[in-house]
Image (cartoon, rainbow, N blue to C red; front, side):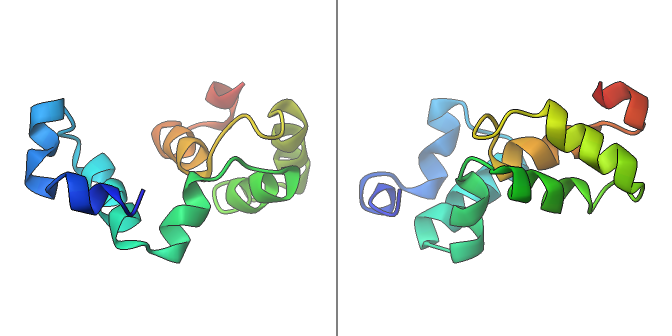
Length: 94
């Protein structure tokens, strides 16, 4: 991904219909090689799922329910955070 910085100027993202500010920031950070951003692009293990879900949900039972329902290596950290950011109620997650 860091090689993309040599191929594509960040000002060209709109040409490829990448206009969402959050996506632009993520791609820019990835192109800069930020370690935390790289980590969030990786697919999640059960531990990673638990870690992120616990930032949004306080009930340990509900956290474990989410962890068991989300298959390992099916979502990236960014995918899961986006879902949890857009979902306001626990019941909507199911």
